[in-house]
Image (cartoon, rainbow, N blue to C red; front, side, top):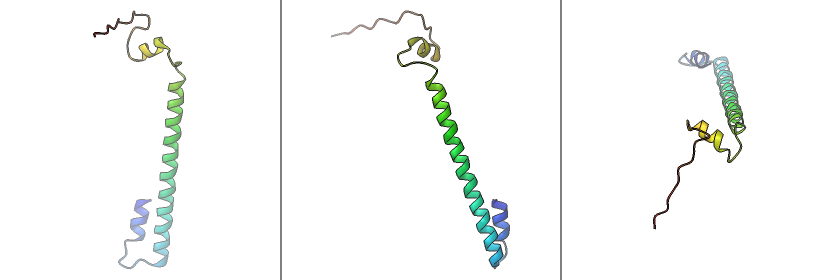
Length: 82
């Protein structure tokens, strides 16, 4: 649509019809950008939903596996130093 818009506004003194064509091209371009943004948002929500559904909160096995650890390995002992 950018090419159409530039072509319509190319003459030194664009006619009313040229301006109308450029305006329609701008509107179509804006609509396409809005639709693409909405689709990206929808895909991001779906990705988060799929990721969230893979493990339950507190599921150490899934969390360990996600980070490359061994799910059944013994956890390190933490010592408090006073």
